[in-house]
Length: 391
Image 1: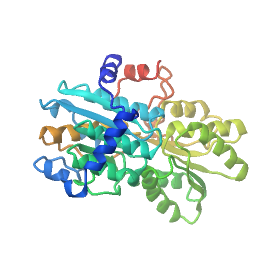
Image 2 (image 1 turned 180 degrees about the vertical axis):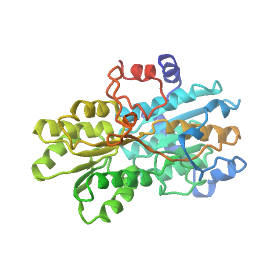
Image 3 (image 1 turned 45 degrees about the vertical axis):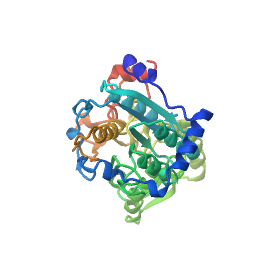
């Protein structure tokens, strides 16, 4: 991991924070007008990227199959890079990119939760001639114009993990999207909670960053499920947390004081919901039913507390950090003029279920790895995860 990541970090990192780069982005934006837009599906029309193909993780390939030989530059534009989940997703991208010797430059930008900065980041990357720009679009539609302008400039722009109702037009605003069906995953989590509640109980639903397309897609999945069961009541949600464990803890402490009966927690971020669990510990209140994405710390917490909390049931899905690799492969294949028929819509199964009779499906805990490790969500090796988090 150290050598691979170091290679990536030695690359020229797009630094749109610098005034010169910001000026370049501004000039670039002014130059790209509606009349100059050339649809990405026109430039890459002869390449089959299977944008609507659904399939499991087992159908994914390695980037070496689509590296090609044309020298190219690739970049990852992150809307908010501070969490462990984001750091793993970035590492997945960089490790995959480093496998192609003809990728001469691997760039990364972090908008730090500021939509205006991500707009500048994307325009700056396009102005500097990056061939592939993978985007985690926290601000959703607010950055669509910047992606459209980068697409018009000839970049293969791929937003990922956005759900099936992401705004914009494929081939014009971006090349394609790479995602799981967030709505379907959310429906499955909500059905699992409802079943564990015997279809009667109070639920708290946590969200993330305000306006993030993931949060909106999650709600489109879970809300209709809870609404169809008269005995299930969503007390609050989706609650903004910025995916910050300290905010989960603060919010949960307040909710425990406000509501005498909370039977289940719906969450999408396993490391975030650990904050809520700490609030339960501090209050000395029995831990309820929980769904989230997997996390080593969450699995270990379940193993440590399940015997003293019989109602603490836990089901998780993959955090799919590896999907940044898939987005990169689609972009590289397009620029190289090569087909990539991997699924663009990934079907995710429940990874862990504490109620399963088969103990191999119970939540996983590896004390030798950092708490931040996401065991079913990453394609990084255990050694790479250890190095990433300094353990």
